[in-house]
Length: 497
Image 1: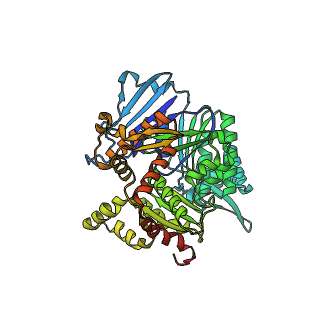
Image 2: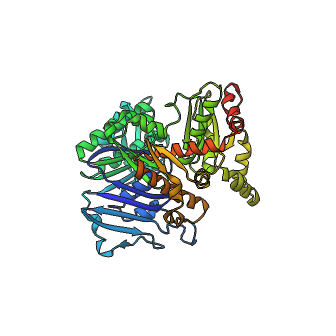
Image 3: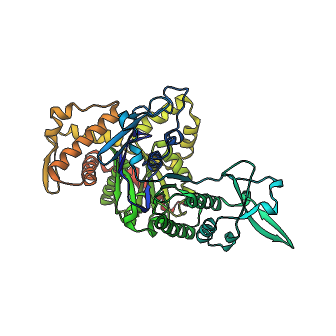
């Protein structure tokens, strides 16, 4: 069983094989496709899933549309593809519209962090109308939250119809019995209550999709939640896919149950059986890091480029060798926002900087100023002392370097690859795209494919070697590299930075 996403909310391509019964942890950086994937899985038994989770603006032809987006379902070699048609997502071929019924799930549930409350009216709090909550719900709450008070959980049916049970916690005020309503439950308590309620109603053999509801929980409660979900999944033969960024959960689950989504620039890789340290190395940048500096960049290409720049800087300088971590975040505005709030996430001793692509300096910020986009320019101006720029827009700069080197040969895994010959080929010259950056991305992917076919080297290693070649060529005068990174690495004693 597989679901595939194409050109959906920034995801160029994602192919996901649906796992067997049990509890699975789904993780990855923001924007890697976790929630979009869960919504596609929800559609297997929920016909309105696309309308509910892929939001459109019906009155606009170019705003929030899903033009070219595809969601494909494959089972036993047969497939059906849903594409956005303006208001609906019609299936193609239409004769396969019933294919989703063959997926072996009795139902699907999508459970998200939700702080909404059901509050009873005063005249509904009548002793004879108050009932003990479901045993399963009470046990779930007590087990996860580690507090026996939830064994006394009650509910009252409100006048707003089925599914509007208002939960109550009793307490004594002298000789009188009083109740706390949901308005006095914490966000974490409410999230777990709603999860417990939905799990108690889940049919056996269901597909249960849980989206980051652990965020409001203490780490110890997160671990108890993990163990409780494993037991429930086994007891009811559920397939539970739980998306999370929690390092606590990642460290406490069997590595065979971790699924990591990792965007490599051309598609989203789905990595399985990964070690927790590998996952945390990609997504964590707070308590998991024994580091002195955190550098926020836009994407994986910027990360590789900056890492090679720092490596060369270490080689040619006598600066101490501080530990650093490069973290891809997303678009340049997301990088700025992450830098701005990083003081609330990272310890005070960790120095934080942004390294933006050069086209932000030459195009994006000037355009924002001309258009009067104050939310962008005000944030940029406020963070100016912590913002630096890479020497190029990564793919564009690297491709320009490769094309400028006549007869370029480089060694990969001991194999000499004649890159210059490939760049002169008709196949390479025919590569195009919608804009200069897309052309560069397509060309770089083709170059990496060419090198990999001839050397067998890994793509990550190929990118590192190519960017190191670019760095060695660009910083022949090492002074400019020292001028960029020297003030950054020497900022460790600046308490006000």
